[in-house]
Amino acid sequence: MSRFAAVLAVLALVAVPAATAQNASVDARMNILAADAGNFFNWTLGSQKVADKFDAASGASIAGSTAGFDKVRYDDAATKKAAIPVGLRGLLLFPVYDFAGFTHDDLKVTENGKALTVRYVHRGTAYELTTDAKGRFNLLTGAKFAKGLADNVGGEFVLKPEFVKEGGDAKNMSDLDWSKIALVADAKDPAASRWYEGDLAFAYKKGVLTIKGKLTEKK
Image (cartoon, rainbow, N blue to C red; front, side, top):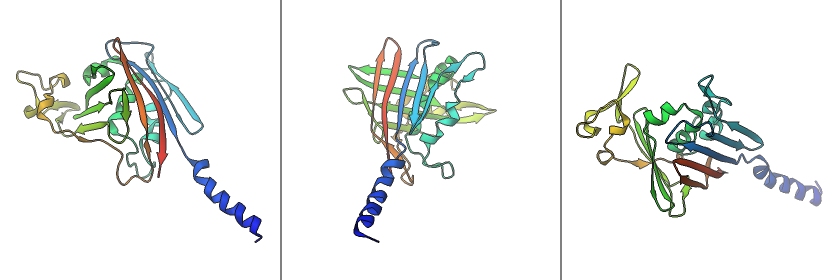
């Protein structure tokens, strides 16, 4: 092999990771106070572009992001190791759900200037996502969760007595006493073969939460 050909071969090998990188982006809008036809969840993965929202007629999302976004959610379809925080994936899917889901999961946003804390409870797990003072959410450090807070009783999740507010209803996620739970880091799986890093821009105005930004693939 000539020296020139050898150089080309090396350059080709170096270029492969950049060419095959599956970076992603998200752009979501959700009104957490009322049903809103303006809610949407748009996302990209490499060259794939998906525009999604809730379809009231069918009661489902129009583009199937609940399953489709698994390409970003997991490192691989076979291993299914988390590539992003579980709580972030769940939050991004709220715009493609009926508003009853917002209420049932008690989705709430707390503001401190531009700094936001987003909380919700889904299928017995409490999720908390926080931003910095500029509204930036970091994929590696911004999310926490607490599992095992409810029992599945006939297909309905009921909060365990020790986690319910005094005088509260165990069937209402809004009656979870957050002071009684232990939140731990919700991040990518350490065993994931690929994952995403980066900061997403969170903003909240008049009951509408928006999330936008790029997710950079790492290996």
